[in-house]
Image (cartoon, rainbow, N blue to C red; front, side, top):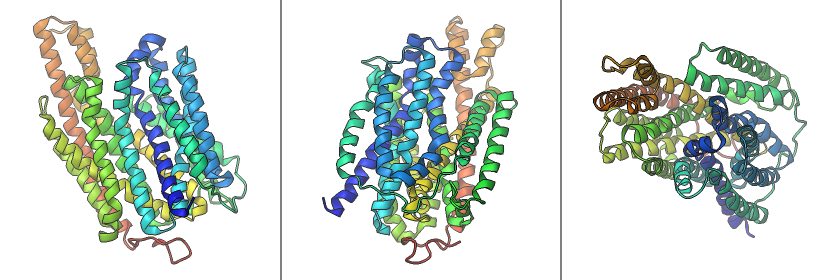
Length: 510
């Protein structure tokens, strides 16, 4: 097989593997009601079923990225894929909630072995800087589409099969990627890997896991909870010790000196903030479509698809635009487009036509796609090929941290605005009023138990308050994105349109 076919074949396989992972991040959400009926999990178990996959994935990305650099990216990715397929079967047929939680945790471990390898394989086969930028843009596009496809795949399967089908569908796709990967993927590794520091591994896992857990818990129950304070303190302490240790090791798990490079730090920050906004809005509008507009889960999933497809278009266009205008201007434009989409969302109501929503989604999606593709390529290009797995892991960890932070911060803004804006009719029973003030879903449940006029008044007031909460949330997100858009061109100033391979000339301005 000649180098051209192998190179583009590697991109296709890496994109397919990433598609499996991104669909799996969102496909479970629609299955939770059916799963709840069959396994009868407690409220705490339900939260762990939903969250444990992301926790395990995020906490091990840095470690698995380094392991792939050391023992071979192809080997680690294919082993991870095989494990992902087997564990998907175990997850689909888990007979109890605790066993399902354990299976989901193992899925996250397998996913952590796959995710960094997809991007580092691309980094190693695309040595031409222009082709690399295009390839990373395509990879980013597929990732964005996967997030949008998850709810649709889930809705289609759940219309005909039991909840376990959303995991079992992974198996045929995993088999295809495994067979293709064995035949096409080239092996690559760091020729001078050094030893893996066994103290740094748990420090990085505890640090990331502690912060993400604290953010998620704070988003649902507030920052004053004991578990939030303990998890945040443990996470920060572990990360401080981890960073100090990396500066003293000859072969660190993460080269923290990279963050002294303006462009590298700016790329990580921009990715974190962009996913911060995108994932929070995905959660918000899943509720808007179903609870405000009254659409089914499948229709709601289809309604959100154009945003993901627009993200794919933005990622595909990124390479062309970078070569014409430069990196800073394209990232800035992407962030401003995303902010514009958010501002458009601030005008929606309880009966907004879908066409208006579609325009806002397309504008936001293209902006997110542009931002991700350019920052991802800039981050990868700033490190030698030998450290591509570690750099990919930093990028993906920023995504996980940004998603958790977005749900915590923007979710708190939404909840606060909803509760402050909710005006309930007088004379409601205390229990119904308390349930209505908690969440929109709680308000609609309480309304269903009330007589006709009172039910309509409570449901209408709750929907109106939720829309008001969306307005506050998207405007907050837009303000954050505008500030970042102003800062990014300065941070990426001096970074060439085409970043050469390290050794040809200085890759990045310090």
